[in-house]
Amino acid sequence: MSIAGGVDKAPLRGREAGCDTIQVFTKSNRQWAAKPLTDEQVRAYKDNLAATGIGPVVAHTCYLINLAAPSVSVWRRSVASFRDEMERAERLGIPYLVTHPGSHLGAGEAEGVARVAEALNALHAALPESALLVLLEATAGQGTSLGRRFEEIAAILERVEARERLGVCLDTCHLFAAGYDLRTPTGYAKTMGELAACVGLKRVKAIHLNDSKAGLGSRVDRHTHIGEGALGTGAFRLLLNDRRFRRVPMILETPKDGDGVAADRRNLARLRRLLGWPGEPTGKGGHPTHGVGPPTHGVGDPTSRVGRPATPSTRRGLR
Ligand SMILES: [Zn+2]
Image (cartoon, rainbow, N blue to C red; front, side, top):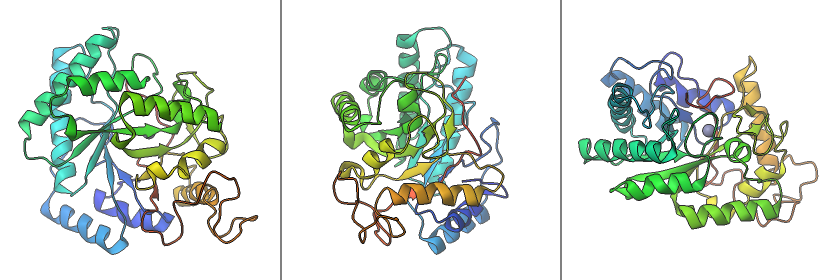
């Protein structure tokens, strides 16, 4: 959700678009530095959040951060900036901070994994009281970015001492571009089986729902509207009706196309239709018509968590 005019405006925009949950940046996503949050901003944000009933909120780190950076100065700057992001999120009462693991920039995957783990260990040591959960996002594997395979995320987790302070964020576009075929029940089950074996499904604390402009295994990270990309609707139907994820916040990161509210509402409606929400043309009073089990989200269901993106448009991976 856009934070133009201040992060406190995001819950109001979320309500306007019809979201149950939102993702925000707590500062500009393209700048290292940010003014500290004022007490007034924090209060306004919390008041607006309470008034809308939206939650849980997910924060996303700025795109400049690279915890896998081979350059010591960039790595140090990234860790300092990440610490600031953790403190900002915590101050706003946000429980989850999503980050891309980082890019090794040619140093190799093993080296990159080691640097990310070292950064997370340092951050955990610096903020021992923080209740925030950092979520490592599965990526499309564009360029030298880490997180394309579940094994890479598992390798980072293995090297972090306070593993209980970490979770995982899935992204349908990234998974598909990384080569995980979510379109069919067989491909979906295989992907989730691998995820369960590598990191465990309980680690999944947030899911980004985006269609993909690029094809299976393309390693190209280009988000598009639900049902208009190479993924189609099958993957979303399987994911939305997977009871194992019924309490996991699901966030749109789809393009805004000028009128952000209209685009958000359209994408949300498409997703909710896959759950057998009222308004489904073939709907029989809230039952899914596709045979993948009972709807796990519904109108008025407090576990419904289909939300809105932080990103203004098609997102690119870290460089
Ligand atoms: Zn994402």
